[in-house]
Length: 168
Image (cartoon, rainbow, N blue to C red; front, side):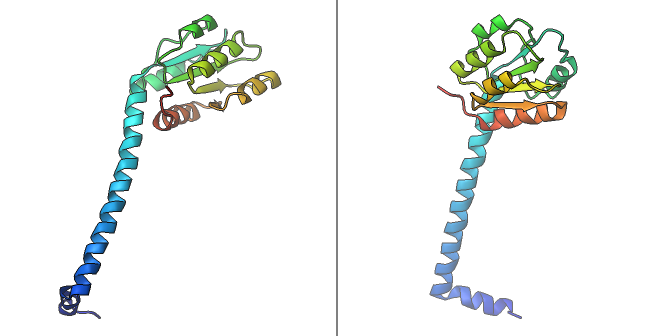
């Protein structure tokens, strides 16, 4: 067992002091790198949370509970959901687009193309299986996610907003 006196004796030598200083420098560099990573992610989330989330729903799709869940979290700025896909022309400073999907949904390609042009990620909330043509459309856009459970929707929204940078 090393006594405290022998440990202090080792540190008091010149080599011991050098090793302690090197250890402190390495620990400080690691702490600084971690802090930069952490604060960069938090700033990105903060900036994305200030921008609104646009929700498009197909006719007949009820996402009232899901919208209420997102609003109650008080983490996100949710615009009033719409069934009018023509509002995709107004996509601009949004952080995210959520689509309440239904088979043969009118305007899905318009919404996805508007999101692609604006470089905004898309979440497709589908309670039913996607049609093959819709899968192909979505697969042509890299920044999309498909989910079908409320908790997965909340998780995807938070994850995307905390990691996705605002494109210029």
